[in-house]
Every structure is written in structure tokens, then in C-alpha cells.
Length: 265
Image (cartoon, rainbow, N blue to C red; front, top):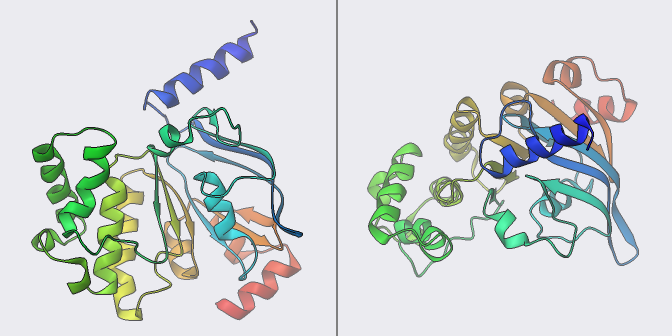
């Protein structure tokens, strides 16, 4: 076996054991294509994500941003290509996608909280059912996470009594309860009133400061510039340009990106 193969196996083993280092590739996407009927939404995406990166995905509506995230989490099945997440190719039908998904948290535009459960019950449901965490430990962890997002006093409240921003912070806490290695945010603030956006962005900012690997589909350009280690601009199903926030926002090379930024900045 070659030294390169040994190194790759060692890296994959470290990632799967939850010991990912900053240099580890935790997501490796090659020639990802996704069609819905005759509409090809993703047209050959190639992308690597390293542990600890915060990547903002920007672009016009219909560019394939949300579909890309949904493919990374196995919610949409790729038409072709490979998506290796934490050492497992989730595009391979033989992969146990549910097991891989335990390590990937996802926060959607709409909060998807269970209205018949309290806030704390929403957060403890998955750890107790899937990871078999004892109820008392799951409750303690839920309170810890609610404290982190500034909502500890809402533990026993009904989700319907919360504001949109509060619901989204609960949704983030619910995802974090599974102790994921990767967090995906699909336009997490676009359904919120403007005055509620700041609290949610602060939670994401705090996660970035703690080294959480994150991919964010966002329309918040100032936030993307501030928090990201890399920005990806997608258009018409391809990655048109990517680079540091300074490069993408300060010195865009693609005419399409320049046109897009002229309308959103």
C-alpha cells in the first residue's frame, strides 16, 4: 500500500472518530450533478471543505444553492457524482445515510419545530431516540444549549409562543444537541423580520468562533464578509467564483459576480 493511501486512510479514520483537525477534508464533492426531471439544477460541482472552515454560499435565486446543501445532507439524491462526508460517500446507495447524518446538523429557512412539544422536548427528541441519551442528561444538555442561544427561560414554553428569531435559535440548539461536526444553514435568516436577524447571526458567529465547520447559504452579504473563511458564488448550477471574502467582495473577477454584487451591496 502506498504512503499516499496510508495517509488518506489515516485521515479518514481520524475524521470518523471525531478527531478532525483543521487540515482534514471533511467534505469532498466531485462532479456533483442534480436534475429534477429535465431541469439540471447542479451542473458539475467540485468542492472541498476543511475542518473549521466557515463557507458562505451566495448567488441569485435559482442558482442551486439550497439543492447543493440538501445533497450534502442526503435530503436530495445526486443524479451523478460523489459526495464524501466524513469518509462516507453519501451518494453511494450502500452508505448508511442516517448514521452519517448524525454528524451533520442542518438549519432550514423555516424552523420545523414540533408544535405539540415544548422547546426542551424539541431539543431532546433526537438525542434520546437516536443516540439513546438518558432523559436527564438530554434535558441538561438542552438547557445548556438554550443558555448558549439566550433562551434558557423558554425551555418549557410552547414553540408557538416564540418569535421567529427565537424559533430559529431553538432550531439551531436542536441541531447542536446531536453534537454534529458540520453545520449547514439554508438561508436561516431570510424568513425573519429584520430586527430578529441579529440574534440569529450572533449565534452563528459564536459557533464560528468556536471552530465549528459550517456552510451557510445566505443573502446577508455583510455577515458573509465578516464571518467566512471562504465565499462561494454560484450561478446557473455551477461555482462561478470562490475565494476569501476579501477576494470575492473586494476584487471579483467574474463579470457575473460583479453584476450580482452591484445589485446586493
